[in-house]
Image (cartoon, each protein chain N blue to C red):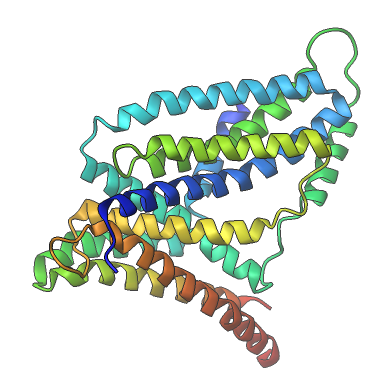
Length: 70
Length: 263
């Protein structure tokens, strides 16, 4: 079933085309969700902390790609 | 000015419908290009039968998976689906930023149509009665491939809260109807659809939803009075992602220019 393989490849491609970018997103989300909420008392800032890290990951990834591009 | 619960509900339903509509529009345009190429070269009955069969299969997947998700605890669905939609949304946003900055080429529907048409012509002509298997398979495959992405988006958007699956599905169906109507009327690829702008918008919407749902699923709090509905964070997240994305486009152009000059 070639189309099943194509769909599986397409499905993975939905989430990942730059492995380090995807890994950084998942690592940061897990870090905030699992660790930070147990060690900080400023609970209302955990949501914005999650967002800030994700935004930084996006910025780093596109700037790195731009510098690499010739 | 205070925001009422009803307004918040309408905002969430509206953004869910809009996100599903825009994302499905992009995927349907891509599928239409190939179905048009298949139909124009090898005949319409087999191409349309292939596309229709895939649509029936996709509808069955939504009907089976959508209600099944409601049996899983909401926070778990929000966490897992939120993480998936975050990966998906940020990937689209990253690509849209790089395309807007001119660092990767825009998707060209005319070129995709020409490539698919040439591929169909190279495969020889179908002779005899019955369905053209090659045309049926080509139309079925592309509709399944692009449709699977739409199904994921619909299920992911619909899984965030009770009652969101319907607006997400309606948004996707509306996009399909618009693209089919335009395809029937024009009989050519929809090359003028601003695909990257749509991907930019969908990337922002999905990134905001994904961030919010991961936060909700993990039990993270957002700033604001304890009595406030946490949904109010979603428009702020959208605005923040939009501001960052718009700021990044010229930054990327400059970084690429500097790298070229230094070399």
